[in-house]
Structures are given as structure tokens and as C-alpha cells.
View 1 (cartoon, rainbow, N blue to C red):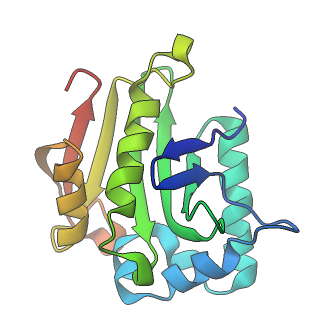
View 2: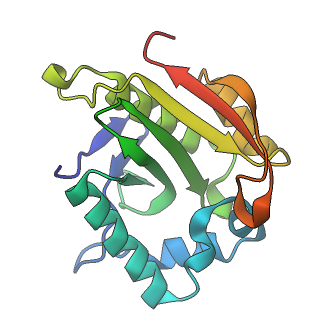
Length: 183
């Protein structure tokens, strides 16, 4: 699938980029250097601009292969990347995926992720005939100590389902929540 841009009201969501106009690598690297981001997200492999570029390239492959759709949540006037959202572990044939996000430390607490998650969910659950993905279920998992992630999930209508023991980074437990198209 070609990347889909999403209007999230005060923000817009676009594919990750490295080109003559936009370079998301510095923002990804800054997020990866944040202690909370390293602890709770998959940004651990981003250690320099080269590995940040590899993440951008992997995101493009995910779109092309329909395995992971990634967006940069951006400031509309500048295109600055403020957060990253991913619909990963896509199972389009079974109509479900997992949603994850990370916010740049300087932009936390502004509602960027909550607003952007809502926009991604509308796209995910919208019927394919209307340009949506036609998903039935979206999963959200977070470390039990990540209060910010828990709060976003609950604000966005995810329902707690249980704990996946030893399923996270460093074999940490993960709280599992989900939202259905019918919720």
C-alpha cells in the first residue's frame, strides 16, 4: 500500500521521511535517546543518524509489504516530527493489528498522541470501500509502569484484557488492551 496521510485536526500524520525537504532522523534519534522512550518502545536500535535512517527505510518497506504502517505526527506549518505512531503486526486478512506510539520528550502532554491515535483508529476501522483499512480489532500493549501509555489507551477507548507475562522488552510483562470496530 502507498502511505496514507491522515488529517488529525491540529496535527497531520505522514509517512516517515528522509529527503531534500524533510529529515525525520534527528527527531527519531532524540526520541531514542530519552530514557523513557528507550525503556518502553522499540527505539532501542536507533543509536545514531544511520540507524535512524534504517528505521525510516524499514517503515517504507512496511508500507510496501503491508506489514507495518508508520506515521510521523507533525506540526502542520513546519512538518516537524513530534511523535511516531505505528500499526504493526498487521494481519489484514484477519482484520487486526497492534498500535504503538512514542512522543518526543519536548512535546509530551500536549495531546498529540491522543489526537493522532484517534485519527489512526478512524482510518483503521473505516470500511475499505471508504478508503479505510477495514480492521475489526486493534491491540495496545504497554509496560505496567508506563502510566502515560495507559492513560492514552484508556482515553482512546481501549478496554483492558489482561497481562501478557514476559512479552515485552527484557521479558517484562505487558498490559494488553484492545479496541474493536464495534466499540
